[in-house]
Length: 349
Image (cartoon, rainbow, N blue to C red; front, top):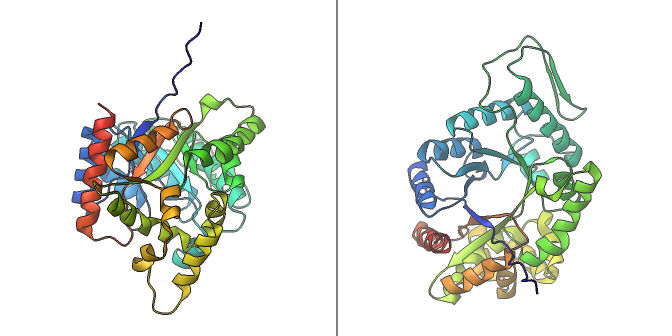
């Protein structure tokens, strides 16, 4: 008789929040104390690389990752230099998480080109890796292609801590997901999703990319992301998570993600409500169907969320957990963060 193997629970990472960097790094230390495997720094209200640097200096054990640094708003050489500096600050704990962002974010907020994002990201990763690997040998460096390129001569710097830093790619759509399987050291999921979506949609796309490159599954870290809203009152946990759902439901680019979960119609209602005169991003939670929040986030009591997290066992290698933030007061975010960290500590024993 053989005993069926028990699916391995993913390692738990966390994206700390703070009104200022002092509070954010304090949350990072609390997450480290709770046993978080990785601390992730986002790029919306702050620079991902500067935030990651602050977390690197404030902690000693967890990996420090960007989730994500926007790949097209910085040159490939600046991206590589920031990665080397982060790896030095963190004593070799850096994970470079790159993402494309959406067209409007790149073109209107940052004045950066966005066309052909799959090819551009492929070439950007090639440039970053080549520079990190060869920046200390003094020889000419050429990498990339027609959309992102590196042509460096007469350059030499002290050797970086590592000549290869893990590069993870964030992807929600099939083409970028396949690219992650083909060239990346890891895939980072969108914070809205579900274990079933990762299993049935993401993993097959990653497998296609892996097969294209002749790679094995063990060469790719699958990092699923989840908005975690923990509260003794399940209704309050759901309310707090609904703001995050509403924020993404208002962005047309994420419509396929909602459609993949059978939520195209309620997502369309949120987008229509957001376009109406007099509405604002802070009010989106009220327009969100509770079924959307339950399907796309992990919300409820500590016991309920722990059970929901177990759904990723055997599917993802690690999880990037984030607290709800959109439409909430700082007090509410702090309370949600404290409850999420308590759960991580409990699950890590």
